[in-house]
Amino acid sequence: MFAHIVLLVTVCAFVSSSEPECSRFHYEEKTLEKMIKTEIYVDKIKSETENMQQKMSDKLDGIQKAWKKTERELKDAIEDNKKAVQEIKEEIDVSTTQIPVVAFQSYFLKEITVENGQTLIFTKTVYDKGLGYNNGTGVYTTPVSGAYLFSVQLCIQVDKFVYVEIVHEDVTIMKVRLVDEGKTYHSCSTVTGVAVLNKGERVWVKSRLSSTGENIWRSPNSVWNSFSGVLINKSD
Image 1 (cartoon, helix red, strand yellow):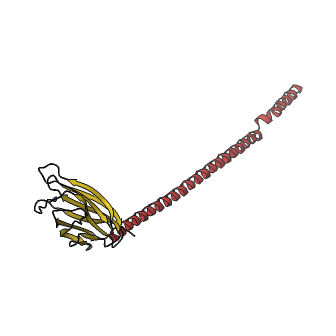
Image 2 (cartoon, rainbow, N blue to C red):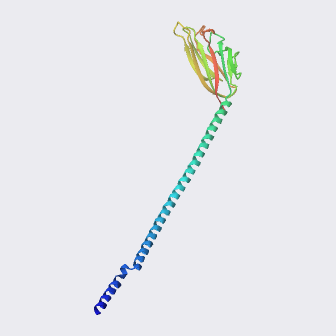
Image 3 (spheres, rainbow, N blue to C red):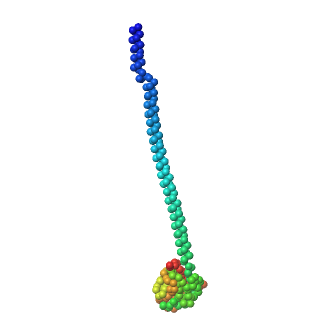
C-alpha cells in the first residue's frame, strides 16, 4: 500500500512540474503573443505602405502641377509668338502701304554736243509716277521726302569724253568721267547715285567738263541716253 502511495505522489509531482510547459494556458499565451507581434508588424507594414502611397501621391500631384504650369507657359509662348508675328506682319503691311510708287525714266538727249556746265535735257519721258520730271528743263523735283536712287546712261562718241555729275540743289550726288577710247565703237556707260531728299528738292544731270564738238552718240533705235530715278524709302 505504501508503495502505491509513493508511486501516486511521484506521478502527481511529475505532472505538476511539467504543466507550465504543456498546459493549454501556455499555448494560448504563446499564440496570443505571436498574434500581437503579427498585428504590430502588419500595422507597421500598413503605416509604411500608407506613407509610401502618400509620398507617391504627393509626387504625382507635383508632376501634374508642373505639367499644368509648363502647359500654360507653352500656351502663353505660342500666343506671344502669334502676337509677335502679327505685329511684324502689320508693320510690314503698314510700311509697304506707306511707300508710294514714285519713279521716272526719260531718254533722247536734246543736244549731242555737251558743253561745260550744261544741264542735260532728256526729252522723251517713258513714265513719271509722281509727276516730278520736267523734260523741258531736264530737272526732276521730288514729290515726297525720302531716299532716292538716280541713274544716268550716256553713250560717248569715239575718242571723246564727258565729265558728268548728278546734283541736287547744286550739291553733288555722284560724279564720273565717261570716255570712249576704243576708236571703233560708241561705248555706253551708266552711273548711279543715292540721296536722301526733302519734298520739293530738285535733281538734274550736269556736264562739268567735256571734249569739244559732238561728244554724245544718239541712236534711239539702238541705245538710249537716259536719266531715271526711283523712291526706295519714304521718310517719316
